[in-house]
Image (cartoon, rainbow, N blue to C red; front, side, top):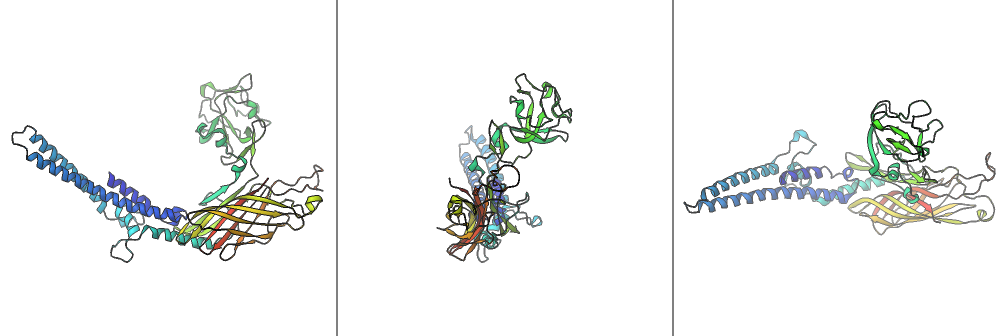
Length: 486
């Protein structure tokens, strides 16, 4: 059993040595290669353990045979020792078979043997140059791939997130504003998968029994009552068995401001609304979008979070090797009609500044190491007649960083709080590139509805962007987001 487990471990980690498998983390590649060698040692130890057991059984038989001929326990002891010898021999033979089994090349490139897995780390022939290939060599290979990938980074081009994208490091700063998904609001433990609706599809639902019916009465035609939907389409049937095809929901319904569908899964007891307006029985709710983020509003309601940015990177691969890095930074908030105070009176007509702070995430390489990094970002915006933005990236953290700092050279902002021409970065190596885009609320017209004639100048809530930088001992590429310091 120990030898078989060692084989499984070796095969598992032998398939986790490429840049793609470790997402550009050289230290993980080294660790995985070492785990293959550890598994080989564990398998060999299993053979030795079986051999020790066999020798102990043989010694026991010898001792039993040395007992006096008239000893009443002699025959039984000899029989027991012989059975132990038989079992230990079988165990040793099975363990040795696992250790010695040759790779079945007909299944290539799938590894199916201990020897095949070990060969990926050591090589096939112990006499060839470079044998064994040390685990550190796999880290070097990954670092080399990442170095190439960072060289392709184009901060001026924003990536496109798709479900098929292998995203290595995408984050958002919604935590700063207390944003939560529906699952976080209702609690993961309160969610179940139920097969409901006309298609009998499994959907995540949470009970809303005991809640106010008014909490879900958010559409003109969807009113929950003890007799069903008043819109006459049977959306809330009373007393319908769970799983019945006619049990359907109303996608336009909201629960505490969250769009989704309300379902009656009450079984024989049905669903109803009591005299106090409370939901009784098997009422359930499922959101229209599991991933949408919400912030708390008034009166126990929630509204969609908008004032945050999503930022990060992902590597692209060719045959398992990192060959490119894509940078991404965006916000669902307004980015096209910000007003930087280029006209007006008082402070808006003078060179005033504002500070923005946040974080960056990206991929870096340094020497024979590579991996994800995080860093702090500080920006200073100058508004009014000639708005500009400048800043720095410091406090790099990761397994492939140095005592680095990046100067984000001052760059002119246009009226939409972005750069017409990308800014430049200064590390200790060749210059790099950085971009910035402000986001925030749409400027309001103090005169009320109608054509905007005199907007109130509103500073960006935050800035987000992408960058790359070069140093004397490495390079980095990533994305960042910041928010105004109050």
